[in-house]
Length: 339
Ligand SMILES: Nc1ncnc2c1ncn2[C@@H]1O[C@H](COP(=O)(O)OP(=O)(O)OP(=O)(O)O)[C@@H](O)[C@H]1O
Ligand SMILES: [Mg+2]
Image (tube, rainbow, N blue to C red):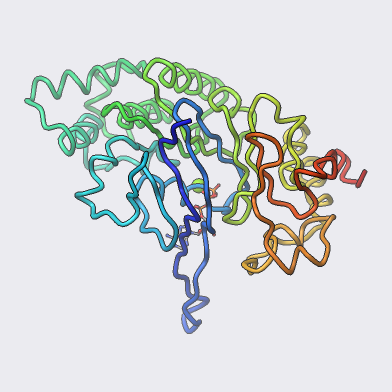
């Protein structure tokens, strides 16, 4: 199947300083991620806060300078293209940003912000430009009069729709949605989700859908990738997630979602994670090892590769291989104990 976008060992680190006098250091936000986004098979990217989801999304859109690895658009290596050379690809990969208020320049009206995107890629006469912007607003169910407002004069739901209109105005093949529902209440979430679903179908858009909210993924995506501390630990098909998931971290994430009471959910997760803090110095071994009840010597010694266990299902765990897939079945039960 044709991959619209592919990353090979994509790596991004940010320089950080520990305190004023501290030594300059680096945080590896994305660590050698290899993923493919197939045409028509939207991919959900999940994982806890700070694991690198937004960084990966921005890197895929060419908005972050990559420190290692390769980014492919179709069969073209676009990793080291200049800004100008990247432009034809950029118009086909748009982003709905995590924070819809910060995504718009407060000095401009929404109309000016959306027109700017058109001007950058498709200069049109004023009448045509205006008609295109208004059509994009109709597409996301917003009235034209809102176009003349500034971002802070819209409700969060309206602003998120405007954010989506701007991402879609160039008819991109790929849209990276970074927590598109995060700032919305339940009813607005549902309507934005439906909107993304409809647009995806009607306009042949493939999404990289970044979220904390597992329950939304199945409405939009065909595949899920689970990220932990900058790495992908599992990739699987959406249809059969409950039966398929094998990595201990994936199981914890999904089991936590099934617990309605947030307090109990937190306790179960902490117990199941052995109370350990995430391990940031993880480059040598498995990133999850200090929080995993099933760790053994090999987990500190070397990093597990992401192996294809069954067609389309990849897991990075030393316990699980194509020949002993059963080792991953129900590693942890819902009350946090081992089976
Ligand atoms: N500009 C930056 N400079 C330094 N560190 C950064 C920068 N942006 C992100 N980071 C760090 O990189 C890591 C990954 O951040 P990122 O925003 O990609 O996480 P995330 O998974 O999107 O989190 P969330 O779910 O909270 O949005 C974090 O440790 C974060 O502190
Ligand atoms: Mg983020």
